[in-house]
Image 1 (spheres, one colour):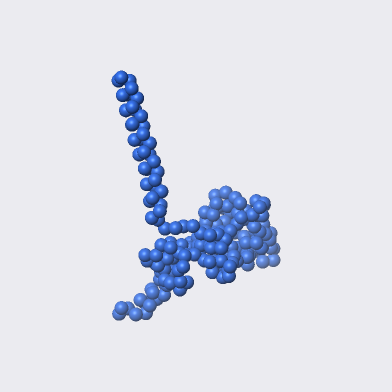
Image 2: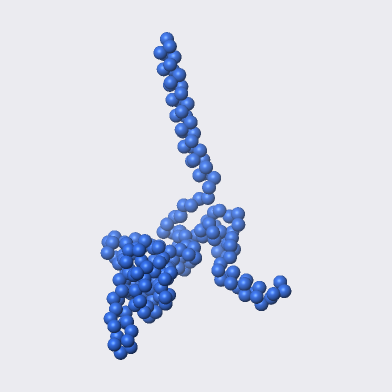
Length: 201
């Protein structure tokens, strides 16, 4: 008799425990139901990246002085700089520059430490290819500027959360000229210049 009651009590405890685990799982589900929708209908909708987004690196051939600082600061020695010494001008002359984006970790060290600012990040995040060798970009491919999401006629650009006006959590159906939460760096600079010109305010 006591053995039977013990089995019933164990069964009841396990049932209660299973119900508690189901409740914990559903609490996570119900918590996500109240959050901002993040579904983007790619490729018909694309997010506008933030100002400091680390996309594909853009390279300006004319600015490069072949100093190889980018190679030295790169954690994996990734950029390949091919140059030859010009005896007439007594300077290095760049012949070829390439970065394999299939290996690149987009840390930004090369962009940050470049003395002539010939390297810069772009908003291009669409680097999908069928063959990984196509991700080895030379100076011609890196010199091409990417298309702006706002300029594509078949794509609806969506703002990220930092670009949305205060209190708005859904980027769909937002007027294109609506203000964002914070100020752009250019707007902060304009405001600082106005403050310097008008010290009485």
